[in-house]
Length: 236
Image (cartoon, rainbow, N blue to C red; front, side):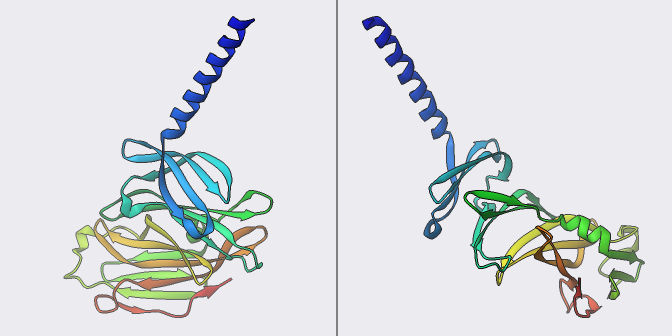
């Protein structure tokens, strides 16, 4: 009997030791101290993976999330009322990749209803494919959002015609922000391997149990460099 108890205690200590060792693999990667929200993840090479969310004393695991380890691109945590219901939502923005002419961000939104409940956010690229039409010549880029047309004149000295794409490309730079209690996505428009003329700005609203586009507009990156006609945003 005594040997049996000793064996059980030994097994228990081994299990506790292994659990502590696994827990120590996690690193603190982002924190919202005043709201008691902390993100932990395991560092594997140049990426953080296997995330853990500590939300007001409760723990949630997100094993398939990834984020680069560069501190300048640490995960962003927001806790704001973005659906205008009087209750705050948890918004986490991850950076999966970055580089020259590249920024790949991903957003996750949760409502706190006796625990975190994931809320779908419409993909900004899907929104663009559905609502934006474009054309590109050696002198002009045209972006049509709904009934609104934006025109950008391309100076020939800035971009050689041989370097121009066949059409305006979107998707290499996707950036999310939370401003004035609104979720916003910004997707850059590219006309050559190194030339970006502006960005599609999508403001989200909560509708039909998900976050969908409330408005879309195009903004040029530099009014001094690019001549443009910028009407008001297209609303939905």
